[in-house]
Length: 115
Image 1: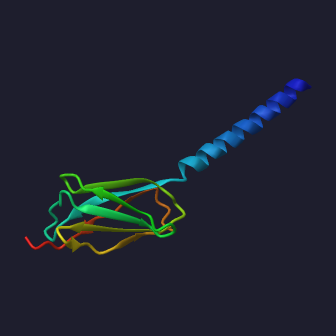
Image 2: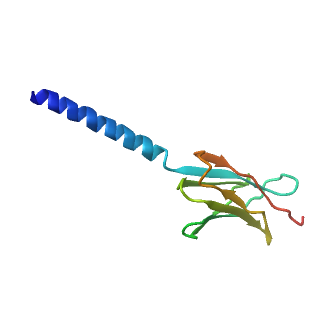
C-alpha cells in the first residue's frame, strides 16, 4: 500500500513540475530588430528606448554596427513603447502589446536622417 501512495505522489509532483516549467518558459518574451535610415541603411550607435507602460521604466540599447538591437526577458502582461533616436532625430513609436502573444517579436525602426 505505501508503494502505491509514493507512486501516486511522484506522478502528481511530476505533473505539477512539468506544468510549472511550461508556464515559466512561456512567461517571457523578446523584441529585437534593426534601426535604419530612409534608405534602409543600418544606423550604428542609434539609441533604442523601451518603455514599460506599467512601471514607466525605460531600458536603452545602443545599436550594433548592423543597426540591430535586442531586449529580452520582457513580461507578456505589459505593453511596451519602442522608439529610436539618432543624431537628434527620432523614429516613430511602436507599441508591443500585451495582447500580442508571440514570444519573439521583430520591429524595424526607421529614422529620417539629414545626411
